[in-house]
Image (cartoon, rainbow, N blue to C red; front, side, top):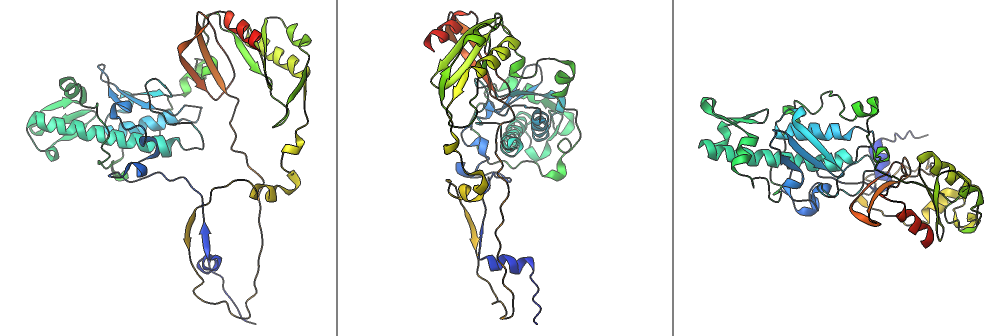
Length: 382
């Protein structure tokens, strides 16, 4: 009998090919082509779209990522404060504002720090370098002679100027495209990142203040709920609205093809109307459009996929003749990368027309209007 020790290296060599799928975000900076920049910077290159100095000696930092209870605004504020060399309490985060902040697509996949954090780190480092260079010109000294302490640039002899004083003399100083040529701080210099800091999102939650879009209440607000089909692909075959229309406060039943919803004066009335309408809905059986759950591994292999080959390698040493060859196939249960809650939107209507701003948030379902005319129109269109 021949002993054959199978090390991890030999096992990998025997595979012949290693395939992996992953999301890549540049971690070092950042003198790079646009395609290799931190993901969130690629289509958001304006520096003032990430960092802005306010007259009250605060720093507004914009992010396209939404706080969903995961604490990302605290972490992103730490990154910004670290790179800018300002105190943490000077940072004010503006989150997921489509009229002012960067377009970072969605908040998903635990990538807010990887994507948004990398972008804020790069923007903060560049803003600090620009302000430092302006201070060097102001004092007539080399940048290497300057120190930054809590948002103040200190020159030899004790002369100093705050970021805000520098910006007041050069209002356009941060209104430029990010050059992406400034290296962020090395981790050895961190004094804010990595420290335990009270989360900024907790006070509102603990005291009951409005935190999410579903907390918003506007004058004469109307609430809506959607009736979901029992399974993917099901079609609405018949509908009895009688029970739903008897719910107090119900304003409208909306049907658009297979889309079904209700609108009511109060949230609990919308929920009751949705439940009643669901009982009156008859859906087609869409079981044929779903994969065979008993043979899910085979079904998944037939779906569209994206594969990336990291590298290939041959076995450096042939296996001994007496080696026992073993083959196996492994599968795990299907994991859906689904949302943690249904979508939410608040729409504001002026004279029956959409207002010029709409806010969306993937947490709950509500709808708002200045008058009931909008809901009535939706009922007639349905």
